[in-house]
Image (cartoon, rainbow, N blue to C red; front, side):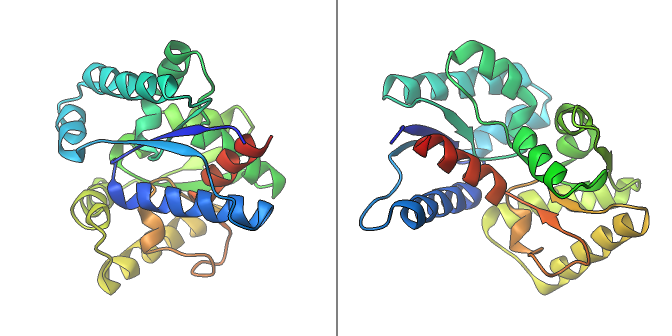
Length: 229
């Protein structure tokens, strides 16, 4: 089994999900007492968020590079970033570390292609919705991405990701609003919805919408496939 390194704490909620899903996935394939051989580097999220709020992605990059190098020195053969937003610097990190980085947007694009979907809605932090690092990976596969147009809606999603979901808080009121937002994107032609933040599956689950959803399970499956390749 190949050893992987998980960079987490961005947030701890999603990191816990990654660890659980990867271990369950390995066990489903190998049985017995077989589980994932992995290392975890978990950040204090407040330090990361302070940099990102200041648009200081260079400092965030240096923090993640240090984490990746630590995991690599511990024997990790690939890196998994347990958060969507951090993939803003994924290509840069990939070039610097010299081992594979399993990219969540690239893996998501592959799964969308399998369903022959050409237009998707993307929900996530404002960084993920407004910047191109995620959408460009989809465009490379011929997939069009739409996001909420309203600044008020984007602010709501951004706020609840950090102040509620990132703390493990999921209320019925927030779930209802997320479903309304997703359904508006469906009305605008989205044939699927990407849960482009690893905490959004707390409020949107398979079966909640009339179209397929694409969430962090895609990323963890790719990590499992790498470990067992």
